Amino acid sequence: MCINKINYSKINSFIVPYSIVFSVAVCFTSFSSVSGAASTKTITQSEQMPDDKQLAKLGEQKTDFGQGWYICSETEKTCTMWNAIKIVNVDPYKNIKYRIGSLNLTFPKGRPTLTSQDKRLKITLGMIINYDIGGFIGPDNKYGQDVSGSRGYIRRGRFSLGVQYDDFLLTVSPDFGEFFRDTYNLYEANLAYKGFKNTIISIGLFQPRSSMEDAESSTGYEFMERPAIVDVVRNIAGGEPRLSFGAQHFGKRYLISAYVTGQRLGKAFQQNFQNNQIGGVFRAAVHPLSTRDLDLHVGLSSSFALHGDNKKYGISARQDAQLWLSKQYIRTGTLNGVDNVWAIGPEVAFRWKRLVLQSEFYNVHLGRNSSQAEYRPNFNFKGWYILSSYTIFGQPRSYNNARAIFNPPTGSYFNPAAGQWGALEWGTRFSQMDLDDRVHSYSSTGKFQGVQGGKQTIITTGFNWYPSTHMRIMLEYHHVHATGSKGNKYNLYGRSSDFITSRLQFTF
Image 1: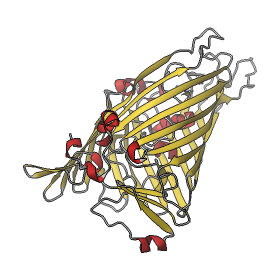
Image 2: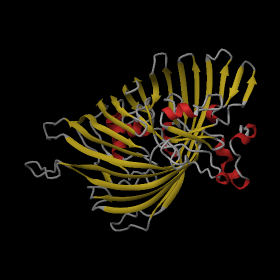
Image 3: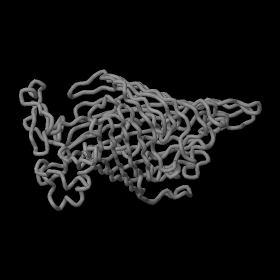
Image 4: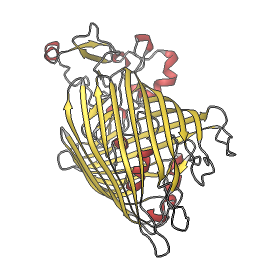
């Protein structure tokens, strides 16, 4: 819709052989929840680019590459996409403007937006599509259950409608991806108030952010899916779509958020402890060190659930991928007598130039009640991950104070005729989830009192290519090793598997 109106003379128009593949992507932009924080600011033609003297004071230099500027350290001999500190792009949508009655239709960063003349009313439309494919490398039939095969499906097919009047924002996001079939195809429906500085107060159905990795938008993950421990923690009292009420506030060097949460929407969550559940999530983070080359992040996250309809609870973990939902290598099974569930742990992240290191560790505690007939000990399960990401070319990840995370890389619009290839990132992650506890504990009558859910260790590595801010292509390799999981037909005695996954992502 907006492609025909873009002045390509200002962004070095795509050459014909590539226009068919990428023309749709040019109309898209990086997706974040309409109610979420803003992404990294870019300089448009309507803004003033710092001159050479101003950049020299910062120890920086610039190169005009047609679409915008590469900003590099002045110590570099040349300033290119390979060593850019920052890439500021010309906004190809800024001159696209229509009048519809008393409303103006514009496309800031590619997103259709209707704004009233007095600017009090704003209506925006967004979209995200993730198509995932993957397959095991070779068959694995060692213990009777086949874990070979491949598949592809729409992971997310989400539309987002935002209606803002003054400081109130109503957001409704249906999702037609496979994971929302049991939630009436609804990702979120909530009302937010933004009248206080750097503060968002929200109520309704949405995902309260329960950890650093969980606070990232799905369009900016270093990998296709979160590590297993993050999914376990977020499912206690976070996860979408969840009845929630709370607030988030941030400053230049800190963030704090707290939410009271209820039951998740969907038939799958209307059973056991999760039915009519009451809980909450809390997160606090500081950003004590920030320079051009260095960022340090330290935080603490916690989730808890204090009440449910009955005393049954179970934990399972997938292989850090969501392609094979039923093939869970580790799981506790249903545990009786659960009175409360909580998790707490630290988060640490460090950036040095183009390299980011990030890690989180969590202890998940299940408090249990004993009965007259049975002693029920408490259980503790642990998990952690450490990841690294390195931006090979393009603007490296930058710190986002409003979410206390690192934004994904950005690059020039894909134009190989001019030597512009977007942004490319390489990542590696090591994660572990341990669902074993009290494995040598027996009652006086010989009854097993522990949990042998299994321990899963996963190594993942892959590349993320951003041809523009509207499109991403991901390719990953996973190696999974899991110890035996009692009563689990897919992993009675332990498994080691290898598989490859890929994602094609479009957003606006």
